[in-house]
Length: 340
Ligand code: UFG
Image 1 (cartoon, rainbow, N blue to C red):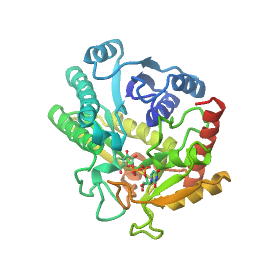
Image 2 (cartoon, rainbow, N blue to C red):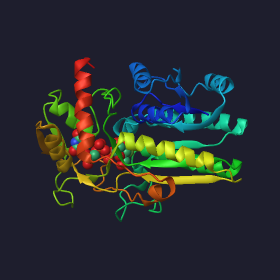
Image 3 (cartoon, rainbow, N blue to C red):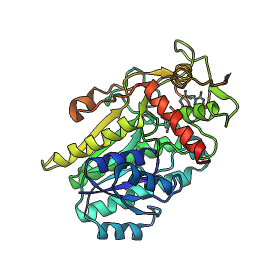
């Protein structure tokens, strides 16, 4: 059983590769290292005692992708490879559409031509925009995301649904809420690339003294403490959901299209100030912060209803916010020790 994992050295990709290897899947990684590092591959081997096949190239290069499909008997794909910086996507829209959609279409061409099925797509809760009611379940109406990044996720979902219907294939769209944390070995985690955009990496670097102060983007939201609320899910729990979703697709032997959609979160919302406090308490460190204006494009509140994933995948998140935040700090220590 060889599973193609694109972006398999990235943050969620690397954690999912570990879970796949632990579940005895063969893994073929394609990753162009644009937002990842080669040492992650070594560390995956170190954690699992197994060696995934690795190809370093850009998925837009169809001829190289064809060679991978020729060389391996691929039974499914988990597609993580994508550019993901929301702000950058507004400045470089054409690059984002090209990168995120051409690569997807190239893989689907191979799948179409070779009669392959079992495709899992990394989507995001951004496809719901600011939902009118909480928690957000899979039937919550979609809204066109504000960011180009978000639009590539929504377009990707539509392309995959059309693919499944037209060619009678099985696909799964996983809508992540806010992934955080690092593997308990502290050998893989979210790698800092420049100034972090996301809350938890910024908190981590502020606690470590790399950043002077965390900017809290707005305390005038209609929430109990005025700061925005999100659903922070531990990355290893999230990775395990991919294996469960893949196993479900593979076990489904009925003819016809399958389009599975799952929200992946904890079901619990936490405010920005609650995350800061939880990090300080969990790790006994201080996180200096200042309140700033709201960040453009941010929504007030998003947390998931995770009943469907629990019912159909037998999966639910197991790790508390505090436990997840402890792994974040241990990961920062690992990075410090190696001058990364
Ligand atoms: N925040 C701060 N200071 C920071 C960074 C973030 O106060 O330095 C706040 C944000 O304003 C927001 C919350 O922390 O209220 C979470 O922000 P993140 O950037 O960590 O996460 P987002 O929910 O904004 O974005 C995430 C993913 C995106 C995805 C989006 C969909 O990172 O890829 O969810 O809602 F598009």
